Image (cartoon, rainbow, N blue to C red):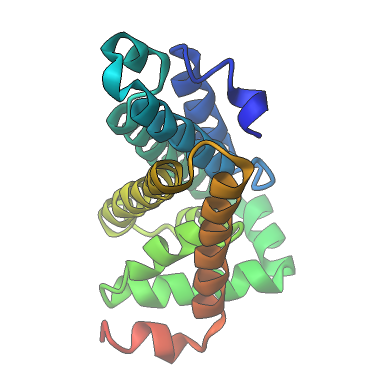
Length: 212
């Protein structure tokens, strides 16, 4: 992975690639946007360490704050697009959701959580595999108001971007731009996703209870 993005980390195109990947993975959850963010951050951290005695070399690695900002903004924008499309989906989308037990259950739990101010479910879902898609589409199809959904979506995007960049940064600082460093960081991201998926599968009262 490091080799495949090595040519991008020294150019502004890395920000465009990250933005597009994060934006689209709400519709294509198979895109490895989290892995891409971590890899770019790992390269940036390792490059910054190497360049400690050579300031001119710092230009060859991504800016971590800009990388996090691109990932967070793309996450929120993707959520908003999916939310609006589902909002306008009409009867066809309602029938598609009704045929899916997972989407129906998620829509019910999301509606109950948001109505009680328990939008933390939106943040948790951002880390779960395909959870972002389910929640964004579910909120739109259920016609939850933007005031109920978007602030939590923004918080979810910032939290996910910060966590992913942080994993890559500290992995690169401690282990260098190696397969080991990147692999451990990616495993930590997957661990967070597995935990989030477990929380989302718990009974509704376990998630919505504290908010009530």
